[in-house]
Length: 222
Image (cartoon, rainbow, N blue to C red; front, top):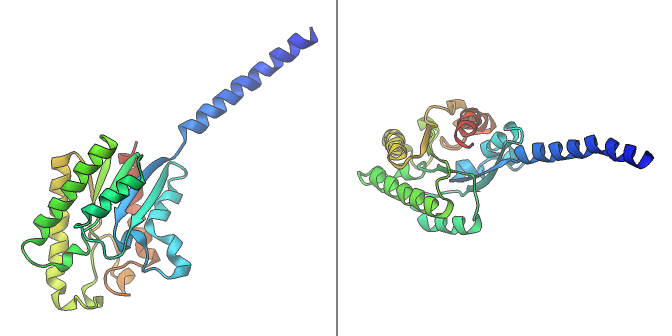
């Protein structure tokens, strides 16, 4: 009788353990790879603030829903398909992908800038589909600059700003054509957050980017 009583007592504990295991599995974070440039990498932030790059802020504020893999690299243009291919080999599995490029392309103010960038991103989308299947892909329109604070590219500040807007418009069209999602960061970063070099946001600027990217990613990556 005592043995039977102990077995009955153990049943709720067993069911409780199973429910807990299912709940734990259900909240396992989704892995999102962010392939971008120095704004993604955060390598222009001071060392003691590097952890506050927008990628980390989004992951933290997702409250365990998202795990972001930061594949940012300073100076990276869209013409980095070979690097993208190598990245796919490093990460054979992903639940979502973010392509956040274009800022470095904007220094090319010729007519070939935008068509070339679109061609490269299209190639990346096709490669990602082959590697991961039909996972959600978010294409990001590049953020704005502060023309007065630019360094070497200040003489072409107006043209560069125009290219950023053109790139964003073209990326939005590409996203619609390829079944991807799109979000624009143009105008998101306050000018006061770009005082260092006109391009790279400070912590407040990264927080502003995160405020846009977090809800977008949560709606896209499911």
